[in-house]
Image (spheres, one colour):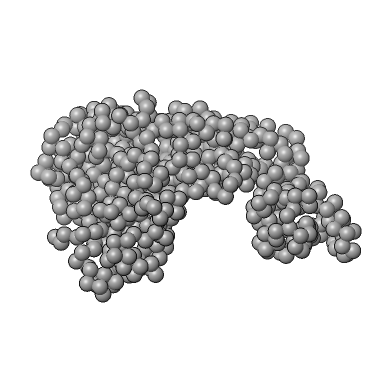
Length: 624
């Protein structure tokens, strides 16, 4: 093996690949060959680095120099300056820290430095398509320990003492689930990895499967040993082609190395894994629906007269955990339960992976200790809300979760504390919202998703959510009536009480938490026929306060309809007959001169415009 003086770890996750990271690698290869440096510089395509918003990204080791938004055209410059002249390229460094007086290292960047990596410990450090690199970082050592040094009972006991709770949303204790299945004597058993991640804004499991597939296999192997399973399935949605590809490569390599198949590591234990591609139905994230799908049936939940750990796939004992849960298991077995519980809280141990997105400066994949305040994630790791906007809420748990307002921003991220707010941790989607987000519209978005993805089996979910969606649509169209908000709450509680599966039982959560914390917005929509954020076009109009207008022309330049009239040093106005309520002027104005008014103001403003300009323009109400 060659001794390289430097390694370029180039992100090869889905996001960076969309930014041409593979072409960047090819450019590095060509340029290094051209300069005779290919024997000195090693270029590696890794999985997701985590800092998705800055992609394509790369890190140079051992220098620990982090480069962001790299382009193919930057490759010659990096090689010339960094590797030949020894001068890191400042213009490609993290902008918040890059200064001429100092070179910011990756460990100095708050997005990275404030995280604690366990499930993601290999992110950005290995080639996910080479089992040797996983093994070099203690890969499969935990499996060897579980197979040859521990009994199944000892493995389960270690998991129970670790306090690891399922990272897929429900938070059920992993060790207890394994114990329930292990106690069923005789017969065939199965272990399943749920990689059907379907929440809007979630990409945690995808990144692990793409970037560290062997950790999923090793976790499943340990779980299979604990419960006595001989067959495992990884259920992955077909929309994750890179994850499927790398998982299959990992399975083939593990078989070649004797880590899957018969008599694994001479232990006498047999276990094999198969990938099953789902068709993208959100409901198949629910355990029983997922198992029916693997059986070749329509993915629909069944009544839970018994736990899947006792009677699951083909009515056999089946343990199902999600990707992140399996990613934690090797480190727990290798380092011990006390090591794992050194982070987190008594009831929420270890770390949690989140996909941080929305109105946040640092969008990406993060892993933090359980118990960390939301504020530390949003402001320290996430870098706060961009463009000077005000933080409004953070949505956790996807369509089954809820919105947590600014007043609760210091809530610790634990299973029990987040539930108190009305939200759930869920699988780890964390969407930040600013003052431009309409909470009624947000509620409608998640409900539209749930209604579309309902399997239709039980009336409370199939009919109830449709009724809720129609009520929200009615309110956002300016047709709300007195009592609509209370009716939404009543129907939501009935859906929760009577739906068959967990998805239906949690589908009203985004609506209920939004009403709970932002009721005034719902009342404005339903009663005053006004959307204060300007999102609901049927409930707003935009106008300029001439006293505040600086006539800078910023709003005029971004208006797609040429609806803003005004000259230099003359306060601008909006021609209501042309305005399409796109909000461009509102978001670009730095002087707070563009205002949002109720839709009823539009006719008044239009009359004034006609009167002042002498134009003959059809009234807005008559146009409609």
